[in-house]
Image 1 (tube, rainbow, N blue to C red):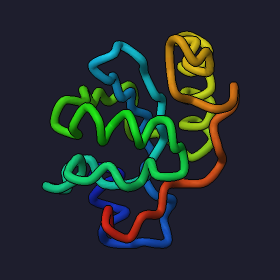
Image 2: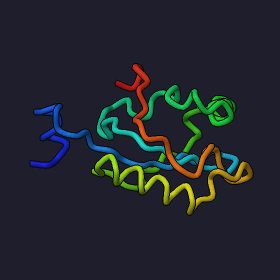
Image 3: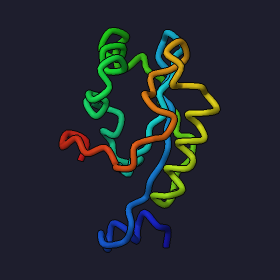
Length: 119
């Protein structure tokens, strides 16, 4: 039985984390980490979980959410693995450079995105 099925049956097990890259039409990227279900039908339906980053959210609204490329970089990670992968990808894509990306810091935040619309 895979970890996703185990978690669905027993929510006390650590949630499955993944790291994704959002690429906007202007070529800039944003590296994100989440523990939302990848197979949830509306996973990519709403951009609201990115509201804290005003520049990114504004760029998403200007471009249209449907025009943002969403790519899963790594999945089925533990919390700590996901933070490490996110930090590595932020450095690799130089996404804290305002000319290349929308990440605000070299290190990713250490909590999951919690927008109620994404649950």
